[in-house]
Image (cartoon, rainbow, N blue to C red; front, side, top):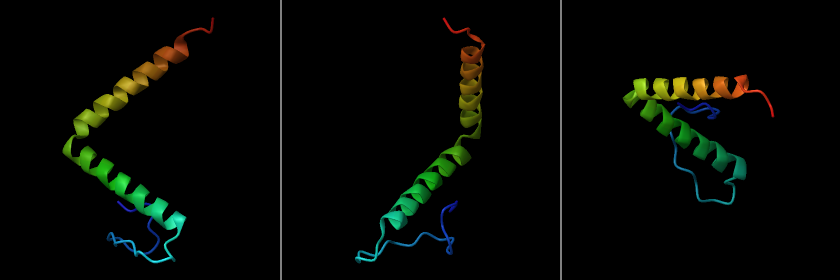
Length: 68
């Protein structure tokens, strides 16, 4: 998916050099997480849609409740 990649579209191994910054590691781990989520979605789109519908229903019922 690569939403946080600046120049490349293919994953590249992180160098083990002192120039490896914290922001680079965070971006790499965010990309890995997004790639895994995209794989789950592509394997089970109906499951993800169902979970979203349940979450929306829960949110709406909690919004309808009046505060005590």
